[in-house]
Image (cartoon, rainbow, N blue to C red; front, side, top):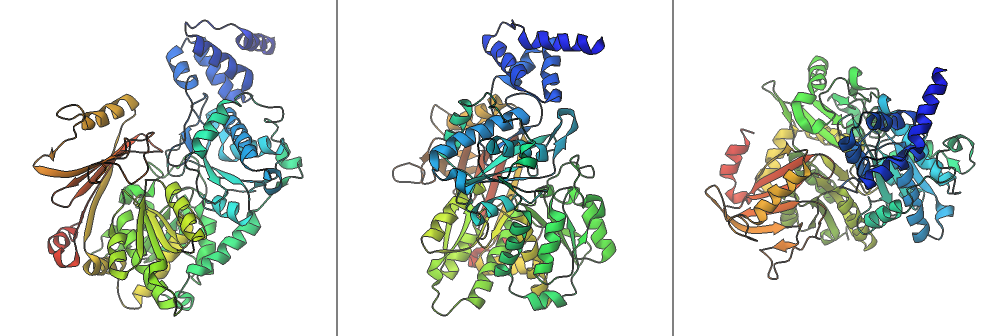
Length: 599
């Protein structure tokens, strides 16, 4: 009887005309209850409806996710603006429609799907399940799908897209976000994350395909369809083989006395970093046992972002002290970012910033290139890249050494696309980075890669150890040669989009309409660049050289004293980020050197 009563109630909810006073909401409620076949998320909406929670229903059902700097990303749970079974099905249906339009050979080349280890019991939602549903939508339309049989680092998906010549790929991940979040990261056939106009066109196609098709919910297809292939062993083998291209001192690595601790932050990185160390000739790094295996609750850290520094590296640092290991390597949960800490002579730990690590990587990759280049190779054919909010240290190295440096908008999708263009024009890219500990050594992958970065740092440290030089000492040498670059980056949390918009509009209309501030405290502002509107006061035509990005807020202030400061919104989290840097030439670095010694 109880089952029948519950069934009647659900039936009434399913077919009832909703009268919330908001026709848009009434329609959205009806659609959700008809289309969602996940009992947990369907029940979440039903409970809100029973309890008259119209505002929350409106928040969940009357808006959609948009592509940020890392694809679609949101909290897991019920609603069209959340990550869940239904929205992933809708997104994949939109992807199918757009890819079918773009590629006549879509059904010959196929599509790659990978996933991390995130999950949420209350929504019966996991990265693995969402990956299976993504595959099911495409398999039902006779598209070959390369679905990894277990969790993989995010860089494996763009790598597989290129290696398997697929038209595109999706990684189900929210990277280093809080445990409640998940995401849908899209890669194009070139192996780079999608940029405009693809993102906008895919969103249009999603809007046209919101009702699930027959077969879209049939995740059994991943077990029964002959079109489903598992690329795990093949891609892992190829990836590890390609790593050898950026290994320069394998014999030295095999003899090093340095010990390394690695933490995978409860994510995917452990097995793959172990394999990478083996490829480079190292003994295995020492894993942090409490964080080695996947745990969607990230139970030993307050947040799963190694960028937060010493506070989240506590277990790694204590283990390193116990094991007499001088270097700690921390990959984030999807292993596309890397944090590094080094034990100093005074017993303190130095946790390097992304910009400091980039200075070391830039020096190392160029030094290795110089020592291994063929006689007729031209340095003018060499490139390094960074996002515009990152340190200009690579620019300083490039100016002195004669290679090219370019900057892009924030987000590795812009770096990946630009690298592909350069490679197609016969150029060689040694290194690229974003200050938020995202690094790319070489060009086998066109996205940031924490696995390769970890083993390159290990080789760099082992090489320096033979000369009794630490990473921090080498960083000082880099600054002494190319000029000190001292930066400060951080963020403010802000969960209200209206407040965020008003902050930036205030800056655009500071003392009077359409007037930016002329001073910050006592410091005079020389130039303003507003990438959101396309304005740049330093250009003769007052137009930004970087592409306009209307969907995000970003204003850069160049001060008369040489400081450059940028304020921007995050594309993946509810943050207002700020970045400031002072750069000095080698002969003008004494003051900045004194300051940096205290950092």
